[in-house]
Image (cartoon, rainbow, N blue to C red; front, side):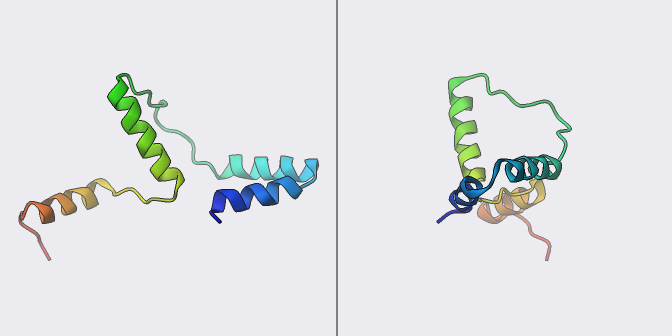
Length: 82
């Protein structure tokens, strides 16, 4: 069972007051957005954005910019500092 399903199971058993507390806690844990919400403009961008969002929701960890550069260098046989 995934974390989302587990959370929903617990949620369904909570009384209304506890649900309000959980919502307040979840809202307080969400980091403030420093950028405006991204909206893909083309059909391809919308499809790719949807795939990215599903990957994140499933728990996949995205690479940082430096991790991505490192992986590209490794795959392309580029120079690596160790």
